Length: 114
Length: 117
Image 1 (tube, each protein chain N blue to C red):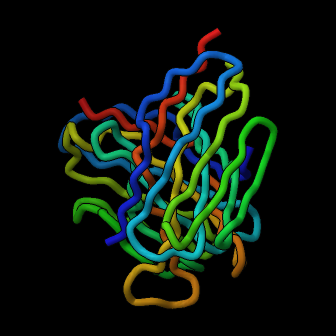
Image 2 (spheres, chains in turn yellow, blue):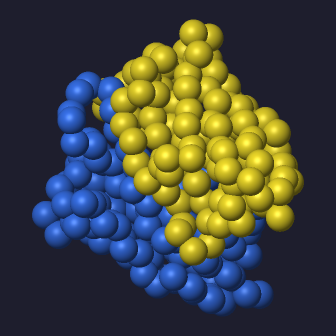
């Protein structure tokens, strides 16, 4: 158990809908990262937040957005969902550590768009 | 843009045999990571490699890093069935725009390892 929690574990929804995925980082970690894992694209970095501020963006679609709240939990919002958005979405957190920069991954949310 | 290539992508081994998974990356990086993923599960950190020549071992797995060649290897010794999983290497990079706290991991496609009795 990495200490990162994600809810829900599974989500099934229809095309065109909007969903919110939630992540709580490990205690004390200020950075939260979101990744998408799909069969065709592999594991892709989406976005990073550090202490409430967006710090880095990867291959995140405009239909997707995220935020990190004052209590450091983060939410990933996916809207106008398409079949191709079906994937496993991971959240990771990392401590403020200038040596290892290790990221600890949550259990993931499996999103199925029908 | 940083690219990370793993090979092989699929590896079927017999128990007791040795094999190596390779991870090449395209630009200079500070850190390289190996993760294990069981089907439908999260990523479990195996190794963090920090510098050229770094070698780390845990049980039947040994990882090494050659930053000059931009190559990391994950060597499996005397494989056992419990090692069956997908193994990912990931390279740390600073996104453009710099700053002290923005890092991202670029992953290889993963190597699906199956160890047969």
